[in-house]
Image 1 (cartoon, rainbow, N blue to C red):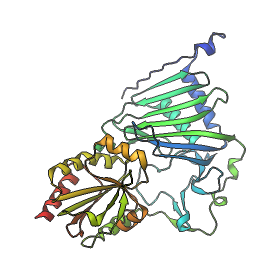
Image 2: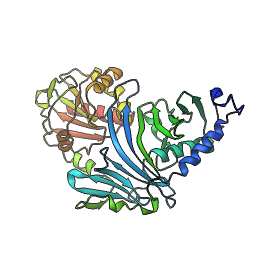
Image 3: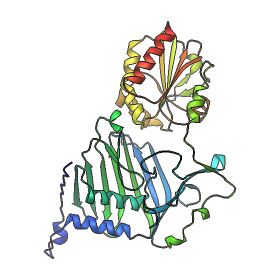
Length: 403
């Protein structure tokens, strides 16, 4: 597709005295080169996620990250470590160019993914902060996609803004830009936006914001220490916790098998609340059919299922069908209320608990649908959502139970 380049540059004040004409493409090339020359970096990353339209973050946390240039890694180009605390004491995950490591303190285990268990066209690895900037700029400077960008001057920073106009969303996973095929199944607007703030004082990026129809992420870099370590000295084994059991990554199929193990058995009992603290319990629900959905506010397929669920609620009276959805990814409070209002939900959306996810054996993934009969026995289980197919399957199953 023809590439569209659009640059809005307001840099007159900076270059008025010298008479030099600012070249935005040269600036981006120079910054890309600067990112590629970083040998090591350690910093605190302030990570936030939002639902579009809601100013309150779904989560807000401070993490410690270290990244090291890895010339042998043709995927990301960098090895990295991510810690769950600002001090760098609790390793969450790491990548050494050969495998991704996920640390699970609650199980005293480490999962090593060498990317052979799944047949994927690229490694599913999130880029660390500075390498992510490199790949975003490299995409802008080399792509033939339909894009536009702007580079705007402010008092203390330059703000870069990229907008893509492709039929798929653009994500920066496993290094370079990836077209997320299949997103159109549940996304009505595939536009992706990326914003990067570059400090004039340090001549380095300090913030990256990604905006898509279903999700917004924002990362701010603090307390940067640059090139203080030699990347050739990096050995991920020096950071993996001692006494933990190392296991290879396996394609997660057990969740589906386990959830289907509930078929024709009493549904696990639960008691939970909505975002206002009102209590709900399975034993208080009385209908010929009960539909339980394990959902998530920032899950694309879950959002795609909402129109179907709302229509389903209108098709049956409460004696025949009652419906309840549970938030499975830990979102709480006003973010839940915003989601309910934004989507116009006409059925309860409650807070899921770790115990419920364990009892229903969903593995924390979403969406899951469980159809119960009037005695609260599980009669059908559905995983995922496809418009037209899942709709029909659930409707047919409801009619089968009611009859």
